[in-house]
Length: 162
Image: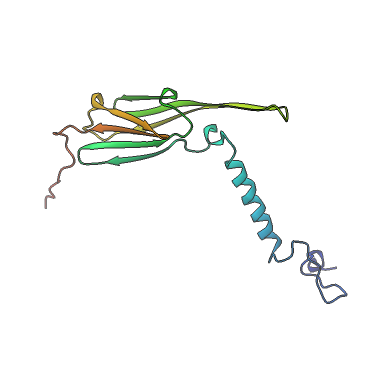
């Protein structure tokens, strides 16, 4: 017996067709395995509350450094402004909060409770006026505006000596 006889898709049977150990239409059983693993991970990442477990970066944040201000936008769906805390200290903006959820289905005698804390810290560029920061919250998007001081040094040219 050779090693080739142990591999089911390499064996030739007495009939004209080789036995197929995987689904019809698939090129290889490895493609099917990969598809099933991808589906498993996709389903796991869609679970409610998974992003708050610390494995995913939650909330999603976009930082825009403009000429006159720094704007930070954070997507925080399902929360209100009372669930989020903002602090600015020593050039670092902190966005933190807690998300709680409770689901009950009396027909199926099913209930589920979970919560998760999150915190994002963003280093701010020099020259930001921390005491003039303002924030708005609309449709699940938190927007923080931090004006820059007019005499903030944006950058300077460094001469090269020969």
